[in-house]
Every structure is written in C-alpha cells, then in structure tokens.
Length: 176
Image 1 (cartoon, rainbow, N blue to C red):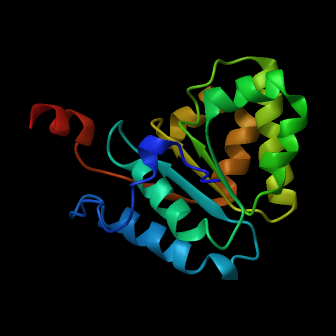
Image 2: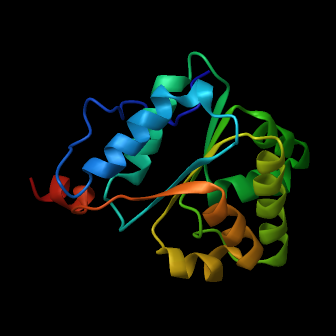
C-alpha cells in the first residue's frame, strides 16, 4: 500500500522546480534520501518556509525514493491527532516505521492531549534513532508556540533545519 495520498504520489525530485531560492533544500532532501541507509543517529529533516513553497513536495519525493525499500508513513498532523484519538493503538505504527513524515506541523489544534501525543511520537522516534521529516509553515521562533517548548527543542535539536524558499507554487498554478 502506498503511504502517500493519491494527490501526492506524483511528487518527485524530477518534477520539483529547482531555483536559486530552493536549491539548498532540494540538495538536502536528495542527499537525505540517497544516504538514508547510513543514518544511524535518527536525525531527520525540518522543512520550513512559507505556504506553497514545496515543503510537502520535497517530503513526498523522499518518500517516493524510499518506500520500496523501507517502511514509511506520511500523515497530515491534524489528521494524525484525530486518528490516534479514534484508534489509540495506531500510535505504534508511527513509532516503528523507518521514516515518518509529519506534514504541516503546528496546524493541529492546540491542547494538552495533542501536545502529549506529539511528544510521545517525537521522543519515541528519537530514542529509537528513527528519522522523521517535519514540514511546517512556521518559522523556527514560532515553532515553540505552536508545538510546545519541549517538543520544539527536541525537533530543532535533533533534525537538520532546511529552509524551503520560493514563490507559492499553488497560486502560480492557479493563475496559469
């Protein structure tokens, strides 16, 4: 079963539009995918930047490279919170996959329950050296206010921070 939603399955490194504003992000993600087998410390990626810049596209491109060889899960963070609320035993799935992508971190409804579940996932993956890719529209200073001090510290301290710059490709596609 493909870990990506149908609409995101076509995202690849080949069809990602690379420019001076996002070349470093593109190279960080291709390198991460290429060297995934050598990651022993659990360090993942925190892809941050404005809406529509291509963070999810790059995360999906990594998934598409790795999904045949590794167990991978991709989830939109607010949907993850709802899924865990309805099926608490599904938490194990997100703790144990080789790579987890948490898309749109910080958009979940803030509650002590959500922050606790997020902490369990982040801490559990870090303690087992399982890399995670996070995407967020929030800058690094705002992240603490969106996900909590402890969670932000764990994410920032244990992942490569990658700015994805550029235009909002969604609005560009709408106007063309």
